[in-house]
Image 1 (cartoon, one colour):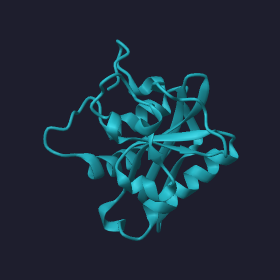
Image 2 (cartoon, rainbow, N blue to C red; image 1 turned 120 degrees about the vertical axis):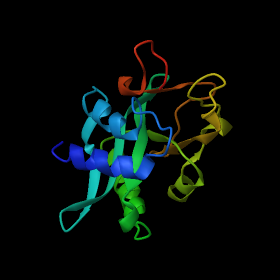
Image 3 (cartoon, one colour; image 1 turned 60 degrees about the vertical axis):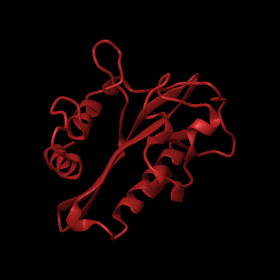
Amino acid sequence: MEDLPQVQSLLREAFWRPGKSETFNEWTLARRVMNDAGYIPGLCLTAKEESALCGYILLSRAGIADSEGLSLGPLAVRSSCQRRGIGKALVRSALEKARDMGFEWVAVLGGSYYRQFGFIDAADLGLVIGEDHPENPFLKIFFLRDHTVSIRGAVLRYCAAFYDESGELL
């Protein structure tokens, strides 16, 4: 992606805080995913105003048991561009493209913001990102088809970019 430096700058602006890891964070994750087999160029979307990058969303391959779907993240909108619906438009566009590509579901680690798009709490369905993982309560899932995959007691598996050399989720 030719916009990678701008994307990384936007993600750093959106997510950096004191004490944030310089090794694994949203701005390095974007680069890692783009170099991973889980990367799907058509599901890496940007929003621009007068050629300036305002927003970014990335969906990458993920798995639940034998079902292939997607993970959403990172999503960011430059602070000067917020409150204009850019993030919502990016999410809606990404979900529509994912549906058109034939994927069954999209998972995200996030708060109540994602409920407006139809995401539900994955814990209610027994889906986790790892046994006793502290982020499990924040896992949401959105089904792109009328049917749902069997996920009770399953573990979401991200593309390899989300894991360290020993296979631990970063």
